[in-house]
Image (cartoon, rainbow, N blue to C red; front, side, top):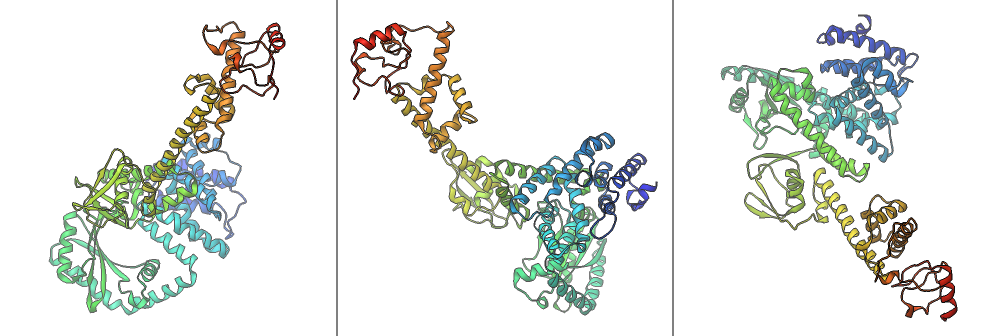
Length: 621
């Protein structure tokens, strides 16, 4: 069809005819909506949605996601509404486009608070439907590929945002190829001079080391064949940003970075990975401490592979990755493999569970963060994981950021364990809670029912979950303690007026809470404890509401006076005046504002009030 032919038809061969027809309709709808609009490069605007859709088709996303990709800017940049999209393409597509429209507000925000708030919105959209972030990542990838058309200042701003937020999300979702390209493009625009220098040096080194690489590649293939391991071996060159990162972290010059080139060995079965490892370790000597088994202990994003570094020909270090074909697909496509390889249900189910668990942990942190800036602070820790792997007493493996402490471990196991931990044992030895954990540590947490989080823990915990839970507990504890103090202060103020707190009925409290603008009784009490409200003022207000309710009840004939209650023995005075219940304490002025301690308010009949006024002297000191 003509509409779909505007895209690369081979990319959409996996779709059904009905889906292709819907996609063609979406293309025509988007083209009409963006008619007359151009990008800063001068190209028609429709070229951007088309490119994003092709990227997603490469990941084999479903027709709803592809349709949403074609329409992802129509709500943001045209007059098209969500209802129109829903009526034409269905509610799921409309929800995806709506989520993406909100996410586009994050573009080019320089204010930290605005960026943090929009990032919070993005994660909420991710948690509802992971396709939202996949479309957004494809959108960002195409924008980064065409970033040369915008001004240098805008270029750096977008590239830095990509490096800080979008590339780490791609890594966390297991989209390794996308992650590396976003990093490379971001580095190119944030540090253009450094990128050009290192890129030129890498090309020069490629020519100088061609003989070494060629000799090593042939040797690896021959050795694996001798060992009877059926495998494909390919050489790969490290990305420029990866080399730059190694130089800055280890303070090396370019000439001191030897492992610019590496090799990837792809075998059919898991057992073949370990056979290949043994064969290659027999060919070249391995570098001690450089072997990592991510097959037995996968990374948090589901990545699996064996990593080792060998000393190759002429003493050149070579990085080797050994994995199965299935592991390779997951490593490159991550969570997008759900759509690309639907037959691998068991492993993909595990990957989806890990992704879902991570998204839920982000939602938990979001719920317990005070504001968007605090939320972003917590999340950035989880987006840049340099992991250590530790064991629970029952042998379960937990992944934590490097530098994590026993407190981080406790909160990772369960929030209640973190809140009640008092000590820790690492490898059967008691250690301080602030002790940093190392790979392979076996950790046991000791708890106590009376224990509670210590504010000092915030100085050394590393995980966002631990930090947000500690802060949430401390805020809640402060609120509860303030409410208890406020209750005591209010009880004292009411006692001075001759009333107990327990004698006040619920309707009186409800009216005072409503009139004061608070959300609950506890909030009023907490405000008193924090000094935001005066207990005497709240006490008088409660008393006025209570007495007003009683008067209304008497006026309607529903109230009855109880015999023997001293607060209901009225004494003469002017009509409408307030007099003490005890006649021996009539030395105070009748026109005093409000009743004093121990007195109740009464409205006396005019005849009795006047009689009292004539027969009893009044002290007017």
